[in-house]
Image (cartoon, rainbow, N blue to C red):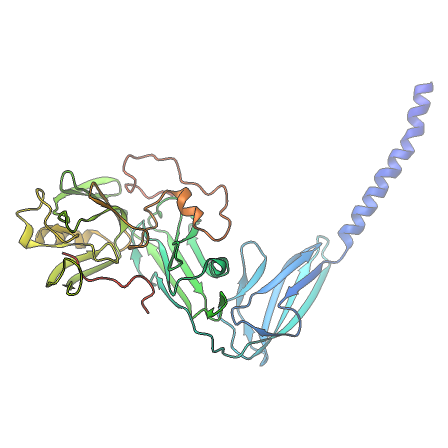
Length: 414
């Protein structure tokens, strides 16, 4: 009886405590959401790259409306993390805008907040020169990095702000990250693995009006959407003087090559085809070990320094045996013509066994480092779970997994 009496006596206390907790929780849930916006109300001299910052307590943003001082609506969309709402185009200089943001609480209560701000007039600040090396309506290879180049290079303290304004969407989703060269002249975007064939990639380099460091401002807002085509990779081995051509992991052909002679060696490393020319001119006058002008057919650029794969009928007797070029991969006229029909800009080219290593930034060198090393070059945190898939094939490029701002392109070759 004593134990029973104690249990009965304790019951009302327990019920009362639960009721109090529920009331407190209910009160919290019933609180209307609160919204803090940026730019601040009545702010002036706002950059035209401004985004609408939204911080919400007790709810979530359910609508954003931005209008200019003539009542015209500005299109836009939220960032994936919901931290800001990004206009689809740069705002206009010297105009006033009003943002109206609605947030909805867990129980349906809504709050609408507004902020009105004025953008700066067109500044006299010198613009940085940027170039997006990703053109719309193209078909690229599976190793194609999205590349943005800058002149002058972006200072380290400004790279996070710039990187936040570089947007990449992939369909189907294949997330990646950006990685900066040490001098800030180029930044590359790629996923941990090669792009899957058929992937659609949409890029926006939304830099116009963005303050960059203490003395520069972004020059333009650029967009492009293209797709990834078939998988092709070229392996060039200096030991055998042979190029192996793979498509979808299958060997299509082996081609004899002549690489750079000892005084002008070819670079070893993972490169990407950057340009394709049916016919072009190599002019090396004024360059060390140069001094010649020659027209070449079926030329495919691998580096800014002037290394190409190209037709070289004059060295066909050396191809497969001796290196005689000025750094290029010489192939026969027949083989060069065949390659032009197989390759795409963005295909991986791996060269091994030469006297020198490929230098970072001499071309689109995003694949010339490991994923861990590449991710270290990001100015923003990289998701910890973003990792390459386990290697399933012996050849690294065999199957896709899952202005002049860059160094001035040399037309040397040889």
